[in-house]
Image 1 (cartoon, helix red, strand yellow):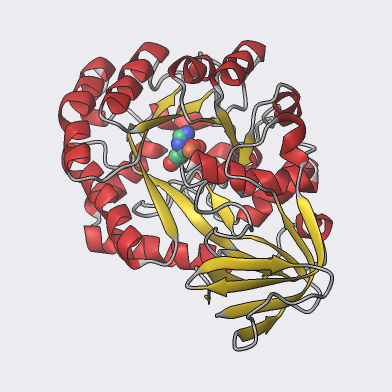
Image 2 (cartoon, helix red, strand yellow; image 1 turned 90 degrees about the vertical axis):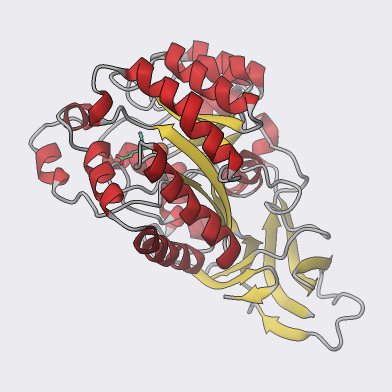
Length: 408
Ligand code: NIG
Ligand code: FE
């Protein structure tokens, strides 16, 4: 048994469902609180200086009056990749756009070459180190996409890394098949045929080995159009994978509208999304996974988060960690960007990186709030309150990270 006592403020959303509209900003705040943990599960929560019954023999952590929240959840990453792409930055600074670089065979396709060249073990070790780093930053659950293999062998290789890490690593990890992330060189000009390969050959193999929980597609100008995206996502849904979609990251070509029509679990990026896309998302109950560090790094505008909240769309915030558009895996930084660029409140931001992100990962029954019966994924912060946490951008304010009841 573990007892965390002397918690200045315990702040958490409640319930095991996504929160949109006014509920996005609803957190409970308990003062002078304590949490009792047994077998990795929260057994009791008390406040007002009272300690839970039966805590006498527990090991004790004194939170020293600090802020305590649920472990953070990063619901959108591309963390399994070969090499890096630091050489792209000078090109970008000279004016090349993200899509210019991709059309010229760089960008994602550059990483595809490096990922194909890497062994599964090399990718495993590299990704494991990223997960270790994420834990130190207070992230206790994450999503991980494929999409740098773009053929049967290499997509499976990336997803097998996810599967091994699901078994070996402390992090709770959900796996997404993003074979439709770019058109590989060998299918240049033949995007429809590539989608057929994914639907007819790769996806069934992914399903057969139980390698993914979700199917995703990069629905974007010069990448996959709405018709191709719909085909890909429906093929995944037919095999029992839940759909998510990279929508309106750069151009608004209809991805957000499609997400609502298909009842996708989430639509992600949404930098260029307008009223029609948001109306469809609101109607379809789609979570908006927003990625502010990508806007920052691509020198783009920021997704219309406030309008989404007004429309009742549940907002999640994630890192988008990848070697191109966001080489940072620091979710605390994304939270600060949510504060100053999306104008979200600290309470709305906490909901975005905990329960709403948990819903986007399909793990809302298990994680995402501090409540009796939930997994004891907890962060003690070097901060007295959420205001301080989102204000001090760039520092790692996670003081003690507890995963399934154990200090990591
Ligand atoms: O979410 N947009 C597509 N995928 C990633 C970028 C991947 C890359 O540039 O390697 C994203 O931004
Ligand atoms: Fe992404």
